[in-house]
Amino acid sequence: MVESDSKDMVGLIETWVWGISLEFYKDSIYRERIIPTIAEVAVAVHQMSSETFNHIPAFEDSRVHILNELESLSPQLFREYPSTQAAKEWILSRLPDNRPATVIHGDLLPQNIICGEDRSEWKVAVIDWEFAKIGDPAYDLAIVTRGDRKLLGIKDSLKLLVEAYQETGSIELNVSDVRIQELMLFLQWLWDSAEWQRIGKLEGHGPDYYAQRLESLLRRAEKGI
Image 1 (tube, one colour):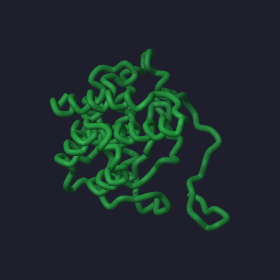
Image 2 (cartoon, rainbow, N blue to C red; image 1 turned 120 degrees about the vertical axis):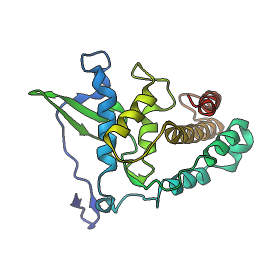
Image 3 (spheres, rainbow, N blue to C red; image 1 turned 90 degrees about the vertical axis):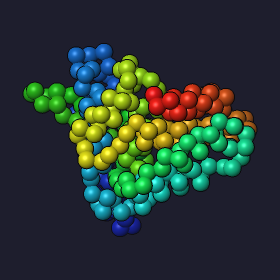
Image 4 (tube, rainbow, N blue to C red; image 1 turned 60 degrees about the vertical axis):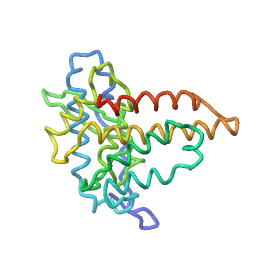
């Protein structure tokens, strides 16, 4: 941590770190290390002292984080897309009670985890911290899985990731906790794409795509899979 010219505390940015992105190990002999590495990184981030990062957005606890994100969504979203109301009700029925807020990376994708074996030691570095905040630790796992059935081709990746996280860390998280944040992501992406479509600047997937993905994810969440 360093002080800027205006005396604000900012993160020190290094020009490079050793290793390659974790995503490139998908078809390598290190493939089995992908899930454990993500879990270990998430645990390490969540164990960092939040007092060190008093310059980033912070929520009181995980419950407040989720409710704040829900309240930030436009009421119009829930009027236009029926599945969004069902998703909201599912989320509200499963809000955490006592899960503390932690430091979260906010974009813990495999491409932001740089690693490699050096003299029989598996070294890991994490880059791109611009979305860091103090909030629900389940968010960091959701941003990795994103409702996909397979992460980098790994079957049952969400279940495996949660299990690896539990084995390494002390914060209680289950698949439903991560599903909440996955649904939150799709609610936000659906609204964003609908807004971009309205103003004629849509790039990438349209709202129908995200609505269908949301419905599919909600069905899986309701079935516990």
